[in-house]
Image (cartoon, rainbow, N blue to C red; front, side, top):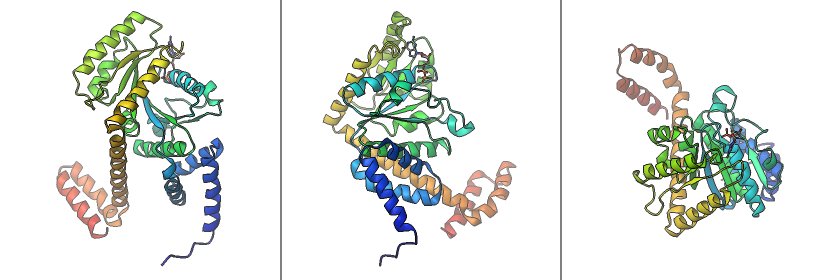
Amino acid sequence: MQSLPEPGQAKVVDHDSELIAGLLAGSRRALAKAITLVESTRAEHRQRAQKLLDTLLPHTGRSMRVGISGVPGVGKSTFIEALGMYLIEGGHRVAVLAVDPSSTVHGGSILGDKTRMELLSQRTEAFIRPSPSSGSLGGVAEHTREALLLCEASGYDIIIVETVGVGQSETAVAAMTDAFVLLMLPNAGDDLQAIKKGIMELADLVVFNKADIDPTAAQLAAAQMRSALSMLHPASANWQPPVLTLSAIRKDGLVEFWLVIEKLRRTLTASGEFEAKRRHQALAWMWQQIDAGLRGHFRENPAVRAALAELSVSVESGATTPAAAAQRLLMLAKRTF
Ligand code: GDP
């Protein structure tokens, strides 16, 4: 039997149906409001956000999702602005989202704020949203993924998710996009760093920016990267990650860049890998949500809370093994799950 609506619920639903209509009609204001709702941690807002996402799900999935990563100063905002303007000229609608782990740690943000991409932000065909500034990296990535779906429902056919080369943010962004691009500088030595950190394996495309400064150095860096990449096992038998050079500031190489992204989409769509990757990403996302939910239940469990401090001390002092303490806490949680 269906339960009766709580007092006030009908009003909330009405309010959200307006929001949904606005968002579907392409209103940037409605989209911004909806994203604020999904970023909220208040239980009541979370519920509304989930309903909103459920309703909008049939309208999602029709964009090309591109992840762009690179260290601060490599030229991400210059590149994204130039690319965004180029794509808008071609009739696209472009949304730019960010995953910035630094914004969650000290409130400040490596990716900066509204002053970036000034030209692009003035265009009605563009939507730019900075990184959510609260929660763990997992929380930020979750909200960005939900924001991405909202942007798709609002008619943006190209979504760019930008991140910095710190922490696990690259893995998180690669897990929510169709193409993951690594932006680098010739001569910076960060190629070695990326190889060490396992970031190279995530890249579908590597781009050396600022090729205008020293074109020969950029070509050399690209050649070295090609040979380094050829030694890695590619994620797809049908796609060996290409290496490009460009100059974001001179808007040189943007056309070639986008041709490669389109080729990637065509190639992986033909082989079935494009859809397979999205299906895999959706399942992985579900499991991450389950893991996070279970961890939350566990930490909030009264029996666990009562025993946790003492057991932690006991593990630190070596009186109890970590495995025994974990077992004990899991048993306590299980009894009341
Ligand atoms: P982000 O921190 O990765 O977003 O980097 P920015 O886009 O803010 O760029 C950092 C600096 O590099 C700025 O002063 C840009 O003007 C400059 N820059 C970006 N792209 C290029 C380029 O292609 N060539 C040159 N010479 N400078 C660039």
